[in-house]
Length: 487
Ligand SMILES: Cc1ncc(COP(=O)(O)O)c(C=O)c1O
Image 1: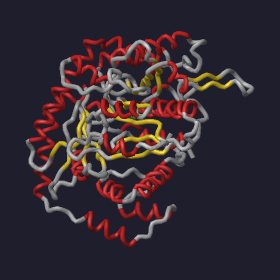
Image 2 (image 1 turned 90 degrees about the horizontal axis):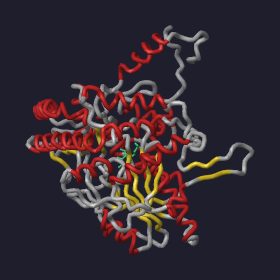
Image 3 (image 1 turned 30 degrees about the horizontal axis):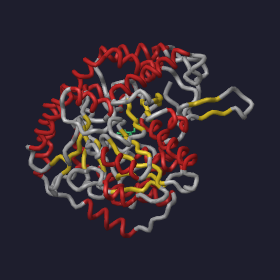
Image 4 (image 1 turned 120 degrees about the vertical axis):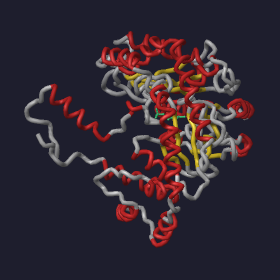
């Protein structure tokens, strides 16, 4: 078992070791990682680093002790709200990310319903299947029932008449995405919000990934569907700064129509023996780093900087979409509204999970997404400033890889996998996990390099079984390091 070394190590050794640990990580600096990382470029990065470390030790637990953090938070929230057609009554908070922001929006809706509709004891939230997983997580953590509705066949936008049918006496909240991560398309927010108004419900817009980018597209004259506080009936909205705000990770904003609603977000505790606790967000003690870094990057890039980035990123996205559309055997799903999209294939020779593996071998990361309801298996691409210079190289390698795959015979792996699954009796225990894991070549102590079979398995298993598998996988992977590093 690894232990704290008896004697402290020199700085050089510490950083050498850290560098060596990074060896197997995705090389995001190459600009070939089409997800996860949003990079504003070296100059802005320097400002972010400096602001982050300047506030590393300040504790945002208590804005009265560190009033500069209160000021930074209020200014970051104001700058964000200013992009989103917010009337002066709109209020909000800084959080650690999309998940925390959404968790808070759902908690606020739940507690508002408890106060205003006490007859509802089993609250429900209606959300399209394209809503982000963190909303399902929020429902799970907070005891709401997620009522999932379909999206339209070719556009992948929320089917609002299905949402209407899903509303019951227990519904407290409707959700739409701007855009949904999977396909990058914006839901019909005006219609969802109108339905919420008609039924006296709250309406949350998840603009975590899109809020900043879409608002600059709008300023640049792109056609952008209405998605923010200019839509009557929108009562809360989340937007992440650590995505297309290009801030350091740990930066998001949750906004509410007014203070009356935000009241239900805030938690205070004076009934224990310790210091007074008053938290707007989920976390309590936290570094001021992300807040200061977000403030710094917004002020450093300014309106002009964001416009320039969005212009560049949109031009590169269009290049990719046009290029991919000309490649026989793959197609873009729906009509993406910003700089992220999904591509699928109808050819029996192009299994997208294998395509992702092949691209990864060549140094490119595309994100596999499972076939769910009417959305086929696909690969997701998010463009950002760091991937722009690689757009042409991507198209070349991508087309070449598709050609190579077309030359090969279609494989029969999926049918073999189905046949093996038929023979298995699935129990929710570790033995089943290890049996299934073995079938797709996963071992308990090593990260898999090819994901095709694993993705296929996770796709075909019933949701509760695949979720059980994923939990077991991580539960086995995340164990205290047992072997001592060579010193
Ligand atoms: C639409 C949307 N909502 C929520 C999230 C969750 O954000 P985070 O990973 O910051 O918790 C994401 C992440 O990509 C997203 O795209």
